[in-house]
Length: 242
Image (cartoon, rainbow, N blue to C red; front, side):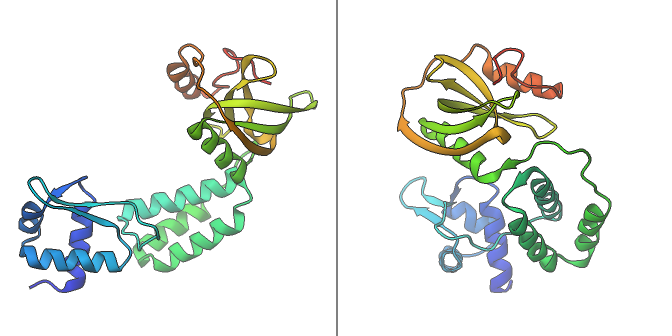
């Protein structure tokens, strides 16, 4: 008979493989009784995992979004990918350096020796080449939220020629190149036209009023990824870049 900890790990891993599991099907998959399954689900909830249950025909279990961050289960490749992403974030954004270092230290302390060597090699043998623009993480999050919520953004902007101005825009999308240069595509309210803005040149963005979405520029969804794959400015040749 499997121990409780092993059963919980198997249950959590199985729940992550599909959006929804029927109760009887899940119990059979885990080779436990429905009663044991219900108890193990309650144990996962006590650990902070939001496991949702539904009854009746088609009822079962699925992982929901919790209010607290529970322990994470990562495969070997996922753990190494997380470490690589954190290292890249430290080189790409300002304002999160200490946080990234703290997370990396915690991650490496929890890694088994075989993975610690892989992550250590990644850090020791990787250097940041060039001095590309670095975005403020808070600025990027504010802009992304404004795009999602369809609210205006007011910010200070420094153009390529060094001229500073105050802008009021209706944000549409964020885009970035392989070289980690981020752009905001937005409707410039005062200029009545779509413009692109380098995110690293944006300062003090403040969300404003909601707006009704406009017709987007033609072929934006196809054009931006195509230009990004070429490794050049993804938008400027099609939409004016301030």
